[in-house]
Amino acid sequence: MAEKPVEYSATGRRKTAVARVRLTPGTGKWKVNRRVLEEYFTSEALRSYIAQPIQLTNSADKFDLSARVRGGGIAGQAGAIRHALARALCNADASLRAVLKDSGCLTRDSRMKERKKPGQPGARKRFQFSKR
Image (cartoon, rainbow, N blue to C red; front, side, top):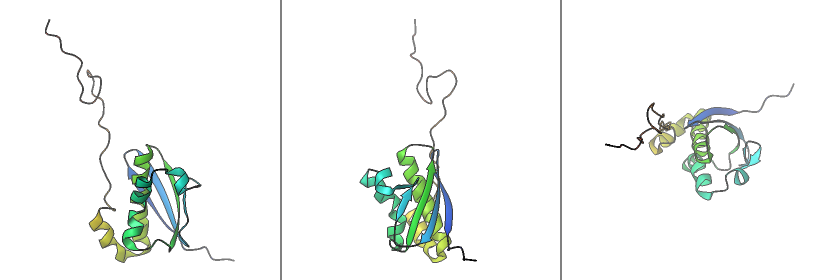
């Protein structure tokens, strides 16, 4: 019976997006929702934001990444993948934790959309006030 290859997985969240990342030893191929990274994230800024944990740890050609991401918008999904990637790298090598923590990659960005309040059209906006 063949042995199962080593695999490191983690979950990351940002706003309402949830990403599940699997790292396997490889040559540096990235797939997001079964599509190539450049095809899914067309913005160079978002791609470099996602790759930040890999660049900080100098492990660009060591792992293949497979990510499944759901919910939220494109920027929230990028943040969720970055968070999950940093956590998976910590699972792969515990000595990388200090570098990733200092750069803020392991911190879950807790900023969420503020809820709409009753008696108002939005979270903070008020209906127009009329004195008479």
